[in-house]
Length: 417
Image (cartoon, rainbow, N blue to C red):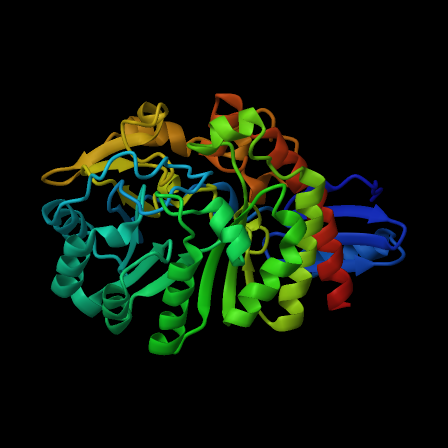
């Protein structure tokens, strides 16, 4: 078999050559191999070991629709005014009622999920909806795994209550005070870091568990990645989730005016490699959403809500296929709204079929890409925001995936050798 320097997909395996040899990654097995001297014998040996096998159906065929989890978008209010907020949170103070939350969870449980999981999220700060959160957790208790994402600007009393109830919490924090206060100030302009740091300390003291952090990087803050990593490390963070600034929501006007700058792809590649190395050396867990399927190619859709693994209910009781498309105030609402929950989950199956058909085999720009089955065209919403068409991927996402994939495969292979 003749191999080129350009990565190629052969059956389930990505293969390419460079000056150090030939590198192969099997998506079925999630295994890598490094061959210094490529020849037909090496190919046959790899094939006997499961490489170059037909792609598993779990990778190419969307799952049957079965809701494994549910996400409640609890409200639109927020004590912060993050400059890049995808949801433009705080423009209203609407909250999900106890009745809607109760109905959504009861309908979800009626589908007999194996391990019930409810994510408390929002187009704003979910902990502002104390009444509804307390009501559903008290009613349904420990039969459900509760997870919540917060800005960290939350009352100490309520945070301790959540910890006592066993809620798993992720804090959205962008780094040391000078970065946090610049990107994520309070609505009145005051610094948010004193409140956030207090909440993180309460979590560490009361829960006895390490911190989980979700952080956004801009062109200006990515150059301070060492300071950001050291800050989170000193705080005892174990799970770190990094994302680049996207041109969504409140960020759009600031990006177009030049106040905010998106991270150049080459810089993002360089930073991801650096962050992953940092995590390996310190035994930390790093999440980069764009790379979520590289080592876990178990779903034929990029998004759980679109492939039928999750259902998202907004504060009005409507169903959305994207947690970033919160309600009718989003101009793309008609694309991602898939129904409501009244007497049952009333789902527009035709619209969900359309969204679920967004697979690499149905995307012209993806059909011949070596990375198509773990990239899957990237995030549908971000694709729409960048190109106006969910079936046309965001060009910067494509460039990132095509650039970083060979580097990561090579690193994994040489480390495993």
